[in-house]
Image 1 (cartoon, rainbow over the protein chains, first blue to last red):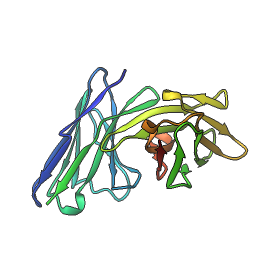
Image 2 (image 1 turned 60 degrees about the vertical axis):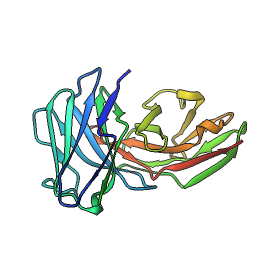
Image 3 (image 1 turned 90 degrees about the horizontal axis):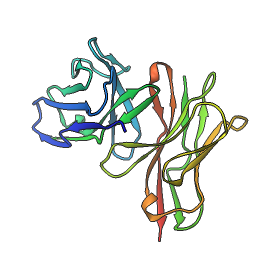
Image 4 (image 1 turned 180 degrees about the vertical axis):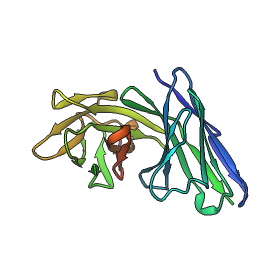
Length: 113
Length: 112
């Protein structure tokens, strides 16, 4: 089946530093990937749509300069949280689109101290 | 805009009993509806979807969902719950450009 991986699975960083999260489609190519954010005991909120070879499309209210998305290949999209602050602590989940379905990665838990 | 609502934050059921997790939707046009399950600190796993066709959709792990157009509902069901079914369940509707809009989630707790 379609497998999506994320790395790292968890990360702790100091306030003000930047953190990069990778999302890979392991056995298929994905022209479109999605990045979600999930707060504790809450639903997933779509942050942006990542398109291979073009700029990401951000949802309203998401700062594009803070959450940098790069989709440089058909199997890899990265989310960089720049100048992270404690309020950025969250569970970040990516998904890759295959035909009409999305397959989700296992998530990355970010804790900013 | 498309949306889904999950009216119950938590559902408790005894093992072996049938379970229902509720979802209602609001869409313009034909709805594409999904159910996902999330285990602690994990991503989402696809359970089933409704695109068109039979109103009763069968999915993974013995789950099924019934699409009811008149009630705008898409409730998730299982005839006999297992303790291992305890998890967080999300209903979702697909919007334009394949974006998924998720409900707030329902925590299912199955007691032995």
